[in-house]
Amino acid sequence: MSSLTAAVTGIDRAPRVVGRALAPAPVQLVLGDPRHGVTRYAREIAEACGAVVVHDAARLDRRPAHLHATDRLLGASPEHAAGAFEALTRRTPLSVTLHDVPQPTDGPGFRDRVAAYARIVRAARGWVVSSEHERSLVHQWVRPDVDGAVVPLPVPVPVAAAAHHDPAPVVGLFGYVYPGKGHRHVVRALAGLVRAATPVTVRLIGGPAPGHDDEVDDLRLLAEARGVPLEVTGHVAEADVVAQLQRVAVPVVAHRNVSASGSLNSWLAAGRRPLVRDGVYAREMARRREGTVTLFRDDTLADRVDAALRRPASTWLEAGTDLRPLLPDAAAAYLAWWRTLA
Image (cartoon, rainbow, N blue to C red):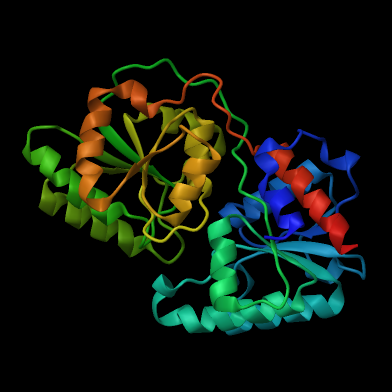
């Protein structure tokens, strides 16, 4: 690990410095649907760094700029996305935060995504990812010529936890609904509890991701067949998210192939200690923020949910839990990293 990467990944122990005090930030090119997680995060980092934000690439000049990118935000196909990024670098020196990095579980599109991310990394003046797991994936599959940095996704501003109470036995999953998010496994796993007379309900806090409306329909059919009550809230306004996350009995993060998760951090910001499916990224986050998650395996989920229903306090964070890095910490790390590119 380079000294820079060590310093950046040690952000959770860094002083909380206002971004502008370190160095001016490059222009932030923010693209995509404002509701998309990557776009929202790009906007939050830009604001925390006091950066100029540009939404139209035609307004870029030769000043250095930075882009938070996933191939799906840049183009209709990985190849098109790579070409779009290369065209941007001909307009201005551009660094990049890579999101949703390729991994073999992507399926048939994996090789095309690897080729696209390789082109993006080659064209960029520097690259960042949001976890050590993502960094290892980039090195394993994309094989960059230069090393990148890790700036972990920050927890949003924490709010006071609601008083512990005895809500209805609702298991909540937060965020867009799409294949691979673990919803199907949760429904199947909890069917056993329902058969054992534990009246548990699954609540999806969010709506289908673009192009995945059929996923909600399929989940309803699966839940009905297994006898598991299923609720889908649809899109939740940002101002209502915390209340929704504090209302469920058991928060669950069940991604099948996650390498960085904003929804996990949203649970933490709401004062919850979620059940998180075991994996490389989950263990990385368990080390980074000790005592903030409860890991489960596929074959232990029902038992973990049952135990959480019996001990509601286990699903809430203790007062004073250290959730760093927060947004100011991430902004300070980005500003320090951009200085190395100058």
